[in-house]
Image 1 (cartoon, rainbow, N blue to C red):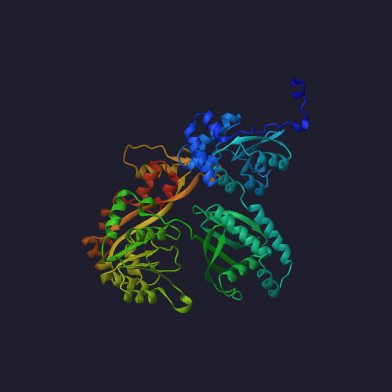
Image 2: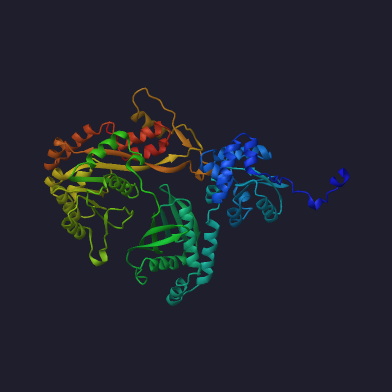
Length: 582
């Protein structure tokens, strides 16, 4: 019998590196990561729910994903890999097509010449191992990884750049050297047309990387398509500028705009469904020398509502801001440049004060978030449903709190201020560089000084700074300019060791993941009210500087640098717009 056992045919032997057929629960008990009792309880849940053993153990808190993957790695004698820090190579990753990578939840990590190392979300999945061996036409070895890291890595690694470029080339070919208006209109009406598939891929890629905007820019040398991620534009693809008209026309059709008008700017909006998420798209067109430039702001309807205590306000600012929101009347303004998170702050404030006892009306263009219990109105200039007109009607609806999306013109500003004077709490936004200059922006718009002085309660100014990547952040020596800013801002004699991300696969090589707000709050007092009534900028600035000493956006950014949350470069960027008021 022994002789027969050693004469197994070559074809019947398991492939090199093929994992043993093991039961996960037995492996974890053997590794003493769970008890036999916990395993039996989990197996009963498996029978009741149909979920996998590992997922149930993680959901119940019995074991973490990292411990689970490490235990499997030890049992199977395979490497454990943290995908957040692994140095991927694009040419190696792309050996496995994206469709197969997502199907089997697998990523190719290393090419060892005679074999490939592949990260597999479930290293005990023998069917996946066999199919990957067939697809890759190589011997493969398996690495254990935390399961939740795999889809995140796939989203980072399989950017749709090649797919988008290929679809752009297909559209060029479809359009040919010359296309008349009728042909183009017919093309954009077909759901399977290259222009439709190109836009679908563009939106999917933008959402995959967390982009806030998509820019389609025809230039002399070609068409540039870029996405804004964490406030910074990244090139998505470059294509022949001939396809710019087809893209612009299709988008204008989706937004219900006039496709025959190419000489004037147009604004519109539409929604797209991507997987299980609905995205609101705000579209703006601008005629340029080489065609229409299109910029789209992407708003995720499924995004969770932020709370005031989760947006990064310093404790002192948060406490004072909550006190202001507790008042029954007055104007509260949130200021900052476009894309600085003003709307997020306003809605966090609304979520804080929204109650059954209050009538809350919002006037917006467009309605960016939907909150239950609020009366929300969308402005429509095409039918003369303007901010001013809606705001006048709101005052007849017996509101307690009114949110005005933006004070765009003197009429809207004056009506909002009158509402604040007459017993309503009014929240709105304004574009100014800091809190101190905000009252004078209202005066510059033509609002009477006495209205500004008697109705304005507080101004909160904000910016967004990029946050260092947790995975690759390390001590960083500041440049001479950065050191000069630190020296000017820090107390005499204090030295800090700033950090900055070096760039890794977790942050797409940028060194940053996500953004956080930096804030400053200016509350009106008797001295500032008197100076605003007299329209005396010098006196107002002097009083405001005294109140905000050491509590400006620049000092908040400095505190984030001190904590290692952001880099000196990001702090300096905020500091250049703020003199620090020392």
